[in-house]
Every structure is written in structure tokens, then in C-alpha cells.
Amino acid sequence: MSYALPYATRVRISVYNLQGKRLKTLVDAQQVAGHHIASWEGRSDDGTTAGSGVYVVQMTAGRLNATHKIVLVR
Image (cartoon, rainbow, N blue to C red; front, side, top):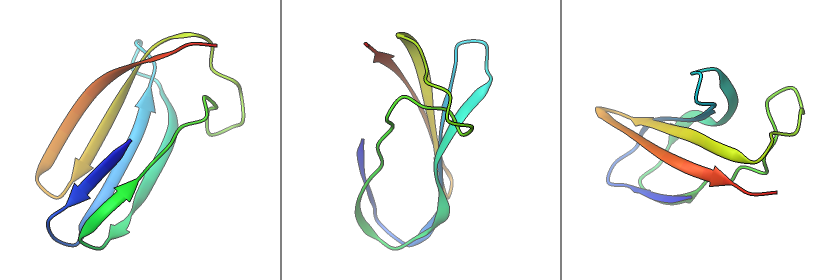
């Protein structure tokens, strides 16, 4: 997923299953303004492979909160 920041801010992007359990934190850092890319290879923080299905990606950047559904197909 690509995203652009208009100013430097702390960014947190995480992947959750539909039960609300956080599987993976993709980004959790202060980032500079500009374009950035975060990717998920379908693994949880502990290295477990996620199965095919629907997942939720949540992004917080400053005052912005965005949530999107994604589909992982194996």
C-alpha cells in the first residue's frame, strides 16, 4: 500500500483479522513528509502464515484514522 504524508508525523499501520486481533504491525514510526510504501507478505508478527480471507488494515497518521478491508488470496 502506498500513502503520502503532507507533513512529518507518527504513523502506525496494522493488519487485523475480522475478530479484531492484531496480526502484524507494518509501520510504527515517525516519518517525514512525502510518499511511502508499506507491504504485507501475509505473515503475523510471530511469523505464522495467515490464511486466505478478509483482513482489516488500520492506519493512524497524526489526526488521520483510516480503515480498509483487504483480501488475501493464497
